[in-house]
Image 1: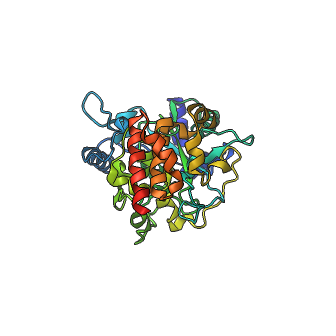
Image 2 (image 1 turned 120 degrees about the horizontal axis):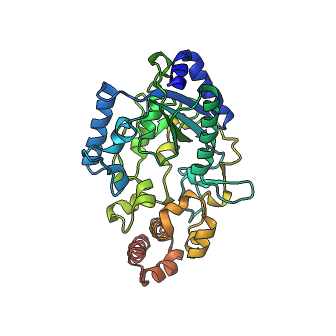
Image 3 (image 1 turned 60 degrees about the horizontal axis):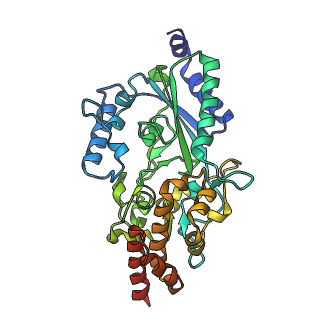
Length: 376
């Protein structure tokens, strides 16, 4: 209680400045703080209703962790008051990962695949770096700094693993607005940044809360128009079960044939809706040495990816986000990308896969063979 009383005594401007300054010292590009919406408030009710509607419509696909409920049947991620009843404020930090590398929509060598920009990160010696661990280390450094300034309090750090919707917390904390592609957009950073969150038990006075960022998408619909699988069904509404990022990373087993053609050359994740966003035209390039791109992962050759055996995959992507797709998933994605390329040089590899015992890969390979033969 003593720490909480001291926290409330901090002036609004000083509190905001303290959080941001300490976050910058910890290695982040931006930060903000917001109170957790009170249970039953307009903000809380609206978010619970939107999330329930989204899940009930089947738009979470097979991501069961997004559908988890408590004993009362409430969706855990629909409200922080459900997920973390003790939390009274949320600190959101942004880490820039933009680079000078080409975009996925730029001309590329024939036979090049695409790995999402966020998964390129590597260390100075060329080994992959897991942004989850990088950001978590920085969040804990910030946490310690806050303890030193404000005294002890309950807290919990999360990087993509917490029972919350990060973009909603980022909006409330003033990091950015939710764009029509459902990504968080920042007027200076664009959308090429990771989000890290610290939930705390410290109450934030209303006058200390950062104002939510203004929506600056205007009438632009470039992201919606560019989505090749029509996953963006309306502004700020995504059917994740159609999203290429979901299909190439989260989806297990066979991918709906109606969606395969739209996947293009994407083999892990997708950047299209961000690549076409005007706010990313002048996004600053990150100088973060822990999140630098591994050049081998920019426009990687499909032939090279196809040649990786299970041991190669494990060594090359140990500690990398790409591990989440699993070896089987990556090869399935490569087969589909080969089919979309229309290049007959991939037929020997695809024919070998098509006659193999791994049914999901064989199915994707047979489909790819048909695409190439039909273009011939």
